Image (cartoon, rainbow, N blue to C red; front, side, top):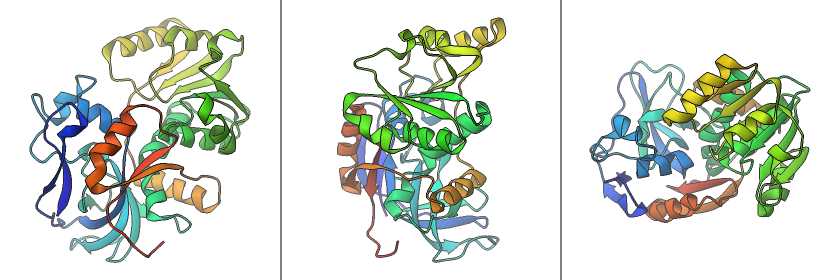
Length: 326
């Protein structure tokens, strides 16, 4: 099968189209023919090995053999292992590959108990492929880590990225008053997703206007740490979706110990129950995915270059195979 293999850390040129062995499902796995996948900010960080701890997971000097990036996908189950009960060949699914990655390819095997669920009926494969990474991250941070409550005032920093757009929609679903922070060109997009207020960070520093929030969710890792703390209400929570570097972790722990404000970071791993929850929201019309650009599998390096610029409006999708099915 064809796959995009990351042969070394560094520039997008490290992404090479190669022929690799088609996987065979184990007894508890499903084999998925991938119709669409994505390039996310996480893929960029892994490809660049930035931050450095990435190397401890994916190879110290260079990526391990046949390191195929891509953490989310949508497609059709082609075969199932002998012990699989929940799925059958022909099922249309969307899935998160988690830290094992491997979605930038024509096929992938995933465990039945993993983050695999039937695709929303009102989404195309491309739209569904753009859900698992951003939406599950936003859901886990807001609902599970932030304990979001109806009526709270929530600010989403980086509201036009994959995580940010999902966070705006989820915060509205949970009944919050939402303020989205993004650049000038993306204000209308963020408004259209339900944000009650929008702030153009190129013209206004939200930490200096005197407004405070119950939750500040930085989806990009680019907000001012001290500024966000000053913009939190008492007992407020500062969520940082990009929280791998040691200094912010230590600073967050110290703040949580010595004040009435909490700093919560970490990572979010896709889970089946979360995908099912999101599927129901999507089919209710309460959530959608926004696709900025589409590329073919052969153009994955070009997609990396675009995402790395940091100006995308929503999701960048890789169309792996065509399907007439919705």
